[in-house]
Length: 234
Image: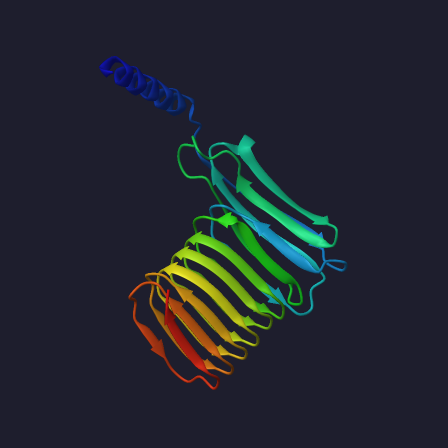
């Protein structure tokens, strides 16, 4: 049994040494991507690690992305913005990061027509996300990082594991699953449906009903709600 463990340790050490020896020096580069938006209804962003900033604008007819790439395995980078059946797909991530050494991130600053729906997935594992000035739906699947959403006209759907969330000035419904971190929601024109884990909640100025399902013991502060408030434990 001891020999088996010794062989396992030696093999693991050899693997780590090989990865370390073959590691390339990290570099930083910038790319500009564009896509005409006339026939597009939505944008899907596939990004694993990196900061994301998205701003909707009224008088634009294209999607523009400024991308900052930081990593050592550039041959593993997947970076592409294309039209797939009327939906814009932005792939901006490094593939096969399990044995990657050093930082591997893709930061995105993006503008698009405010009418377009937005979905951020892959899921997004690390980095802050800011979204503002969109008149349609927003959907975000996030693992780690702070979220800041403001001036959103359509419904919001958020799944979040770790990080602070701030959502304000939303014209429609808000649906949030938040496991850990403080959640602040204010000035919602629709309803709010919120599932809390160990995080806390501060909610104020909601036009319709509020439903809060809580599995942890974080503090919940409820301000002005014009509809019905329902709270329950999971």
